[in-house]
Length: 148
Image (cartoon, rainbow, N blue to C red; front, side, top):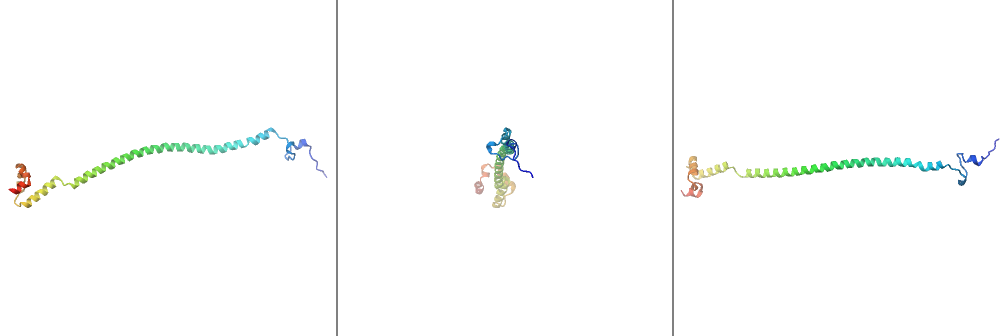
């Protein structure tokens, strides 16, 4: 049978299983550097994974901000045009309403001729025209007609 023989300390330091106390352990300088450098690329990739989308969103927001300002300017112009149109439509409706409320000159003359024809049934249209044209202020004054 074979007996278990411990290895000498020089060969134990290079084995995978290191049971030596901390002071007796032999460490290569690149091993310590590898422990410190290994998280560097991982951290830089994580930082890039966070920073790149944020930068892209920042550019997108800047572009949308410019579009929004242009849209606001156009909306202000459209609002001014709408207000002007409403004012003009209101003026037009007011004039049309006044025009519809006041009778036309033909209607006034027609109503007056009907009223005067009812008062004097013997008067003719020709007689009314001649009195309006030829007799000056007396023909236009209704009191002067009654006194005749």
